[in-house]
Length: 239
Image (cartoon, rainbow, N blue to C red):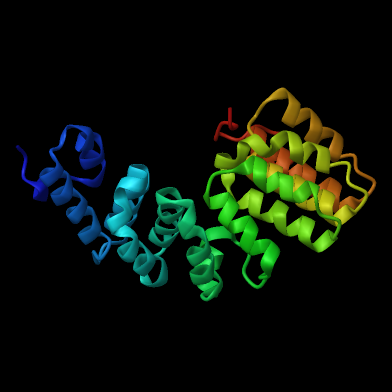
């Protein structure tokens, strides 16, 4: 059997099913140890692998919380995601950690200085990968500020939140220009290059509010890979 010292986080994940309980414990210990590495890349890879193990990585929680508090760069984000995947019961503690450190909160949701209960709920829901629930929160809100915060959180999910596109398109018709602009901004971050998204953004680019129209044009360019002015970029659109 390969020594655990030669197992990378990705390889170790692939071999988990074949490992004996003792070997699994050794491999888990290796990943937990990697959370404390001086390399941000190693930290990130270990956190991602632990998240994929789900509830089987419960022993890694202390190390993951320490990573979220003190880790390097994007490793913090992967640590937060892993905590959410290991068990929903950890989400409350995770939100406490995030809101106690504005820098970490920025890494997770790009919502620096926009704290408050609604953002805490949005972050924990987003990290749990439940886009439907996140947009469900949006549908129940009447406050414009809370609506835009939810849309900002969806946008922070990137293509992982692509399932929110139909709800974002519905929000293009909101009565408030700030909400419409937040919706088209989010579509620029999460939208795939398909007929529905492109047609909706093209229509939004005709919005009576110039800021919304301009934001829709920029979002359209991001989704399709076009450059400003209608020319295609060398970088393909997101299919």
